[in-house]
Length: 539
Image (cartoon, rainbow, N blue to C red):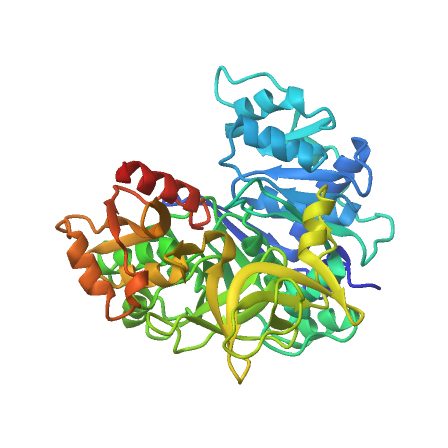
């Protein structure tokens, strides 16, 4: 057996078939939920896999998942992997033009979509000629556009629950479309074996990876249960789906909600004795703090062992607030990307004045972006990773050539993050090179300024952008959402607060107060929006 995700999942099912695998809370607060054992989830995935093959979708073709969180999401991903169909995540906030781009760029042959998105799918469909089979989850609203879609429950009912799929391969693909913080999203093509080791820790993210495929099930059979993983962001955010698969590889339980609602997350933590929550930065951690200080005060979170973030930083201020409320939980700022999987975890001394410091794995280095040679200690460069890396970007050979390279027989991926490395190999992440602000010849990375801003007692959330400036080329602008009822600080107030944490050239020269900071559904920063708001306010 090769390192194939469907094979590995089936091997776990076979040793713990009656163990609970998935708990889904459909409508938070109503008590509506679904629970599936490993055997039940396996059978459900078999049904959708067989349906897709019977509908004419061939191994190697691409299927889009245009869905909210639900059993159907993970069931369909597993069904695709079993049938050797390539799953592709679709951002459910996309509107017609963005959907047309993604459907076409990804060469989707099939689509599983939530009924709520019927009109958007119908609008995009005429310009996606390769999309020939659709499965709808739920009932469309009255008056919704007519679509030639099969109802998901009908698709399940008519298909076999047995396995009986052709032999699979470590080379079978899994595509993760990036969020597209700059430009249009790109599809990162992973071999499943590479994704297993780079994104899923080889079956043991905090220990030694397995050395042979059958060892995964052996470990599950020898171990117990009692760990519950709760990926809180949308599953269409790659990290959440990978978190679910990490849980499956351990033979443990996964809990998911349809949408993130802080109060309901805490109710589920208490009810299900959740041990590990993954989220995306302050956009999710801060509402949990507010809920624990307010309507959910006294919630029993004693089962919670870890809270981890990927894709955005949990700031020192908000981490400290949460830690005071849930002292038993470790808070981990993880660093990774769709192109690299997991790279490392922030050191305890990360924060304002020190930066986002991570102790990385042995496959990660800071290199010169042109020569690809390792940079000297303290010199800026780009983060790169070797070994188990993606094949490239789907349908984009130019960007693939820019991002992937070979040195001494090793294949590397060059990430967009700038960083420095110290003598001990600890990396300080400066930020995305594309978001770097050049002000008077000095470089400013938004994340560092945002951490300082969020430590202000009246600031609820903040993004930082560069605004064209006749004198400095660009100046640093802070777009800030205040706490409810907080007085409006002046620019001088904000500057005085930031100066102990930041060099003078990094201190914001412009302050824009906004009702709400715009972020992606997963909590990632929308820097294009922040820049537009700051530029408009500067006119």
